[in-house]
Length: 415
Ligand code: GLV
Ligand code: MN
Ligand code: MN
Image 1 (spheres, protein in one colour):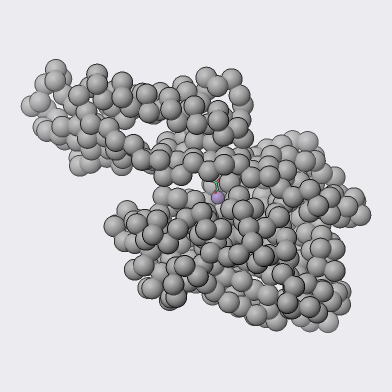
Image 2 (image 1 turned 90 degrees about the horizontal axis):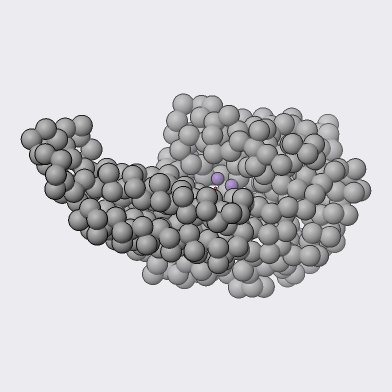
């Protein structure tokens, strides 16, 4: 920390966000950083170097969840946690997750600069694999931390190339027993995650901040369709068992089920459709769909999952294809902690920032951290509500407001 550093250096956060975005599997400014890829490892090294520069002591667990601690005056007290993730889905932007990590670090540096002496330690957490890209399940790091994903379940996960967690984490340099990843409920006193909204409301309403009260309930179902392949020219249409044509019906059935709940909060997406053998003159014999189904009401979401299962049975009977489904996850929603929300509200008022309470429709590591600690989330606007795209954008002013209010709240909770 240099003596000339301003109290809140948004320029340095923006520069660090830009530098982090250069570490990508895709051509920058497109960010792709799949967990345990070479880019993920370089990104981790970069962020850890920034944490070390800030005098934080760094530890990593057996799957690479990273903890950077600013020691408080009473180190035996459970720390106040903050943080998010730095992995990024294919074709992503540079703010999702990274704002919570680098913004959290900046909040700590601001407090250090002001000479604040925390009673409780403040710990920045960088969660492993919030994004489901590699293993098909979101929030792997926080899920294991909360004991929701057991070591046995984690060991069974495979990526597209058939590689498992054991092989990949060892190659990334993470060792130790998977059992050690789960943390006791006493590990964090409280936890706050700063994040971009990933929706349009704050920008539309001209608000600085969103105080998240609930996180929606996400689910994912994998659908495997097996039909009959063959020559695209020689095989006539009657009697075909085209797996992709069957998949097309299922995709539309899922969309219709989500639309038919009458609730704006129900959403369903098929983001992966793998076709085998994937040749233009060959009838598709196998298709794998990965579906994403969410709602703030878990029961209503589950009715959409049931509707998809019913459609699978119907399409299978009519088309003579075999369809199997696997529920990858169906998580309950989480509620944020009233005391942290009150502290965030006090801080927002003291900082002169406008805000509203809102629901998070995206999932976050806080969905699982909430199982072991009181949590809350602080949203900042993002332009046009765009996220999971390279043109994702949050202005320096928005980021500054988030960091300012986060810093005030961390100080209050750590005192
Ligand atoms: C998180 O990235 C989500 O898909 O909500
Ligand atoms: Mn994301
Ligand atoms: Mn995120």
